[in-house]
Amino acid sequence: MIRLARVEDLPLLQDIERAAGEAFRGLGMDSVADDDPASLDELQVYAAASRAWVYADGLDFPVAYVLVDVVDGNAHVEQVTVHPDSARQGLGRELLHAARIWGRGHGMQRQTLSTFRDVPWNAPYYRRLGFEELDAGTWGPQLTRLMEHEAELGLTRWPRVAMWRPTAPPGH
Image 1: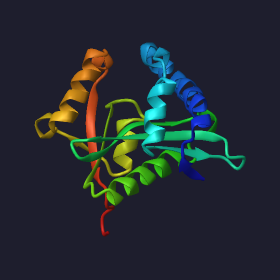
Image 2 (image 1 turned 135 degrees about the horizontal axis):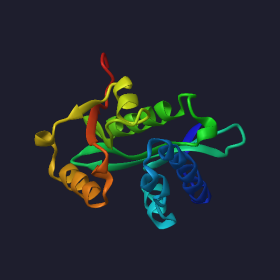
Image 3 (image 1 turned 45 degrees about the horizontal axis):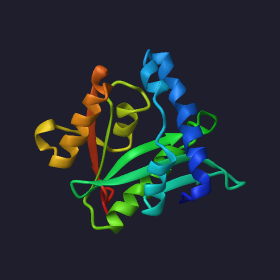
């Protein structure tokens, strides 16, 4: 079940992030695996703004989540993470769809995100879901700043891309 994140969920989102980050070690991306999850204060901002959703199991325990920002007037996926114990069940896809519907409901034309180009569960996964790469020359000012900030954090040691898809699926 997908629902809005609640304050009591926020520490669990941090746990999900830490667990999922471990997969990056296998790719030699230890600094990504070691990166701290968003703080409780940062997560609270998303929850208070109704821009954080969780996928909860049958006991209402969060096993995945998505955070959404508004960047250049688009529904920007700040983070989507699935606990490894719940991976490969389509939960990330469903959360991304919920964020897409939210964007469409708020009059946004695009869903955007930034991600690692070559990590199998990043850009290649998003391509399968209909996302396309955005050329740097087409980025709006906020996405440009976001991508520059990621470079300042050292994330561009591995190739990064910005991607988008329409908030309305084809044929809608």
